Length: 387
View (cartoon, rainbow, N blue to C red):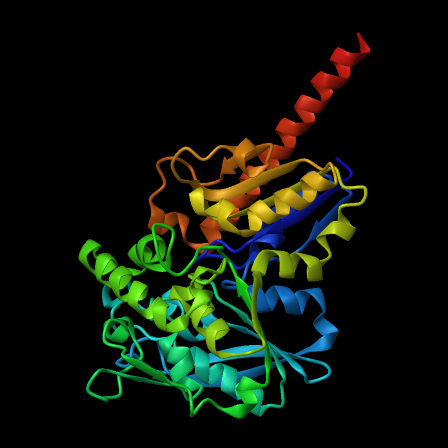
């Protein structure tokens, strides 16, 4: 193996994509691989802006902004986003302001969680002079239909009695009218690109409530209540509810495309990989190593490993995935990969595996073992073909 590309997503709650790439690349170099290309990547979730900055570090500057937490009783959060050298484009993550990682496990409340902080972060970028907002939608703690974001931008939600509703999932079923007269002109005239980490619609079996709200703490009864409310809310939003990615971040994709004229949803992984130059780096590569914290059925819904594998397959380069764990009966060939390796030892407790030092050790061990195995396989094939 003369050239290996490492293009992994973050191991959520443990290591960033940059830290994962560094751990794997270090093991490969220690095994004597002459050229290892580290590409921190993301799909719209945590680490997206960091990956974009890594792709063009000289062209970006960081801006800090304090916004409300997803739950009003939690302290404000300090977010940051990047602005390009021209000062026209801002790169932001919803997870920074309204992310699941910001809410302690025992405090999760899907019915009251709001994306209000994300909307205020968008306004901060506009007030810095940005006319193009690129927002990663992954990793949310919310399923508010995008009410929080829109409320921050000046949109009001009113019930049948004319009362103003708080922007959260609890209010979705009560929305009778959406008043856009207060929508700020600067945000209405901005170009907005939403980076979706999934292609799910707003409602239905593959929608925001049924697929994602259980991961955010929703009970079965709450899932059904949110789904019924989303179906009703979708009629107020119009056709955007069925767009691929409309269900991302609990409906933010549908909401923003419904009310912002120049808003479009695009696959986050594809956007980041293009800027990271994966296709260009594949020239002369012998192997691509990708991965994420957990590979499961959702990986094929637009996650980084699936997009990396698809791009590598188009260039005829084999792909191996390293992950913390594999869920269900996911098979490598269905994702366009040669194999999937779970780096966590079978009996290691999750709280131990999520420690950054342990995760780094597990990644290095798995990468070294994988390389040894590949060398042995190559040697056997070479000897066999020479007979």
